[in-house]
Length: 72
Image (cartoon, rainbow, N blue to C red; front, side, top):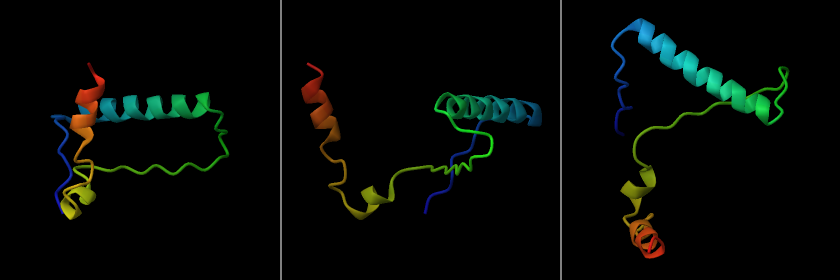
């Protein structure tokens, strides 16, 4: 399994700013769709390439070809 990507943040203050900005964006979107303060929210984060590609070379193999075909 590959390691998670490293975020290029060089100080704790920049990290705090980055996290606060992302969190406020998530909270804004949740309010916009009608989530109430008493609702429970589950947040899942993923990283890296899909394990499906490692398992099957055909997984999304024709995506680039299909995209190129439709961008004429």
